[in-house]
Length: 98
Image (tube, rainbow, N blue to C red; front, side):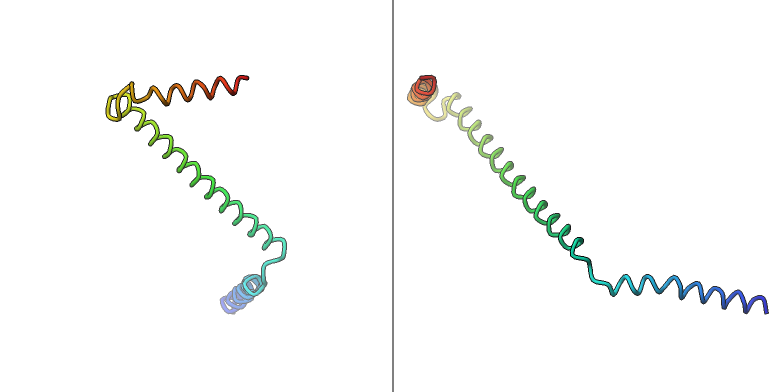
């Protein structure tokens, strides 16, 4: 008899524990929760876009440095090949200062 009572009590406890799970699985997310999820998704998309832009910028800087290194080493005309670029940069800086 005590064993049977324990099983009945355990079954009742199981039913009480299952009810909130069933109710929770059938409930649709609230408007606040959906709004938070949308904001989270937008933030993730923006961060991904920023990270891709940063990666592109770093790649461009790396390419520019490689080209500069090759030019200084003589691969693209050496230092004399940089003279027009340097004079143009100096003129641009003078115009900015004025």
